[in-house]
Image (cartoon, rainbow, N blue to C red; front, side, top):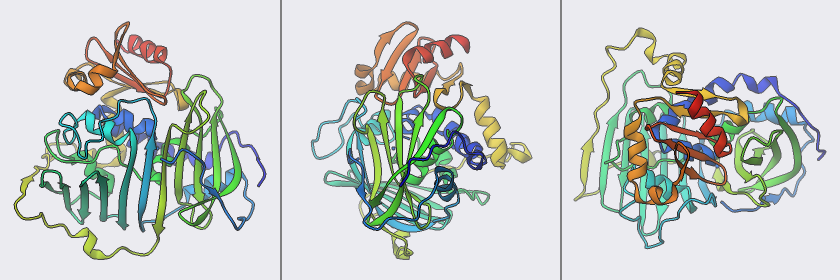
Length: 394
């Protein structure tokens, strides 16, 4: 297939607000910047497709990905991350430092290799099974019921979503606190791809490489390359299903590297409806169950449940500087508790180094600055960009 170039795509701009809204919703949660940095396991490109797909331009492949509506599937996703983060010892179970919901648990999921089973049937039925060594973590949604479970210590938490919740991502707004089992940093390849596709614009070169095969499905190899050296990202390769446009694989390569620092891809995939029984969860005998309260939002303005209003509220809690690949998102004053949580984590405390103005957690694809006054700034940019944003936001 040719290597046609595309400077920008107006077709994708309509998705930028949705992508930014999801991004901003995760960032203030401290661990979320790392998840976004992954934006994405195997370390090499998927195998080439045996049957060539019809030739498409970059704009046509972007439109194919933007128009995909796959909401029923099951499959296995494998992740491999070499971000330079400290990796937990392979002791057969997570370390004590990696308590569920802690920042260390995010490091655990975003370093090394991990496997997860995904089951999705529409907007109201989903299950994620993260396969740990000798253990398993589950997040199950069935209608308004959401369960979080860990077989490691046989603990579960249950949440009943409010009636107005329509977007499955809204369940993350009510996710358990740090003392409850959860699986942070988990996204499908399609969700990760969206984080990068929303950056397509004049500062991005887009081309289509040779067809690839992912989980036995022929896919277009969409290549995205920033046209700026003010980002840690060198290129992103997204495998777009040639039939339905669903992103099947995301590979992110850091500047100066010759292989992906982070990859997420399906190793098996079925588009048939999963067995309904996978969405029914009953806590095993002998375990503990915690009922999670749903925040009372009755006092909020009438438009508080509107997605656009949520976006506005999210922007009010963070400082956003730069655009596209050079975007930096930082928490405002009053986030000292989140910063303290990061620095109290033994793994992060060891990884964060002292720099002028605070401490820096540096990875191949993302830098996170924790300022001396308790603010947090993150971006796929060099450290000096974070320091400049922190100084400007004072």
